[in-house]
View 1 (tube, rainbow, N blue to C red):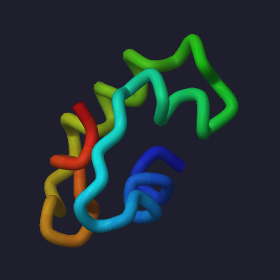
View 2 (tube, rainbow, N blue to C red):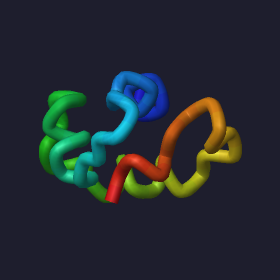
View 3 (cartoon, rainbow, N blue to C red):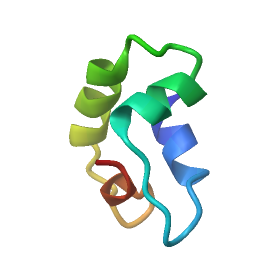
View 4 (cartoon, rainbow, N blue to C red):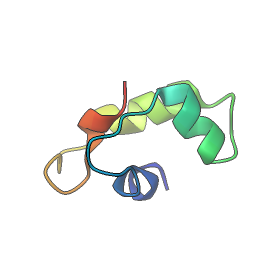
Length: 52
């Protein structure tokens, strides 16, 4: 779910973990978003570098 939403971030844009958690409908889960982002091993396909 987190990685699927990462793919939807347009090229050249960045988002915060909190913003991404809000998009997912779970605003208090920003640490889970950060954890899932850190576990990404497919950075070329799933652009984890667009989240800060």
